[in-house]
Image: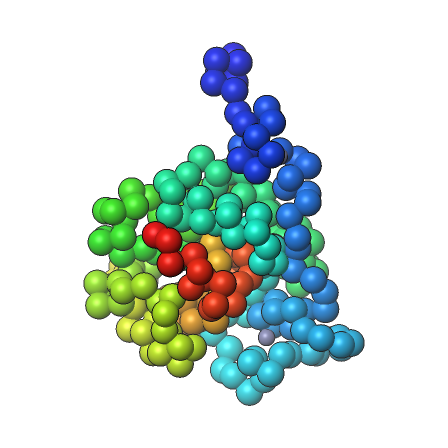
Length: 250
Ligand SMILES: [Zn+2]
Ligand SMILES: [Zn+2]
């Protein structure tokens, strides 16, 4: 009835659709091409071995246990993330969270522990300043859509500290990491064990660029008593340059 009064239109092709992205457009979004680094999920050239790690990940201490992104950079994926992030199109989040669900069910290491472990969903938090101007946290909206779809409980154990609220988009990889480390913290109730988290966490964000944000968040989560495994899932995998073009027309 509601969809008859307020019909949905696909954000990309503008045809009437049951959701805000039609099946056709959703399936046509370019996925991250194989092969990928088994740790961070970055597409890599050449053959892939079982234990393959990209140059970025080799020799790096683990903070998260695995990261995967659903989509590669394209005009459409960039447009959708842009709409979600900067144009208050939070109505797109339920449809986009289907992409998170897709990687969750298609990633072998995750598929192996789906049913046997205790899972919780955690969004990358947003600072008060951004939350006030944007009105919502896009990572939270995506996490909510995914958690609802899968029947997994949603938790909010992380804080974004005011000191790290400036946009990371124009920082170098090294600066991003330094900034990210100072930007996130575990809420005291979780750090002290007054509130508990499941042993396995799915950390959700919209875009994976250098991975600094999710690595810093995963590091905080691993300080919570009982947390053993953190998997990072994002909609888009994009280089820093692509995101500079996103920021340029805010
Ligand atoms: Zn469409
Ligand atoms: Zn890697």
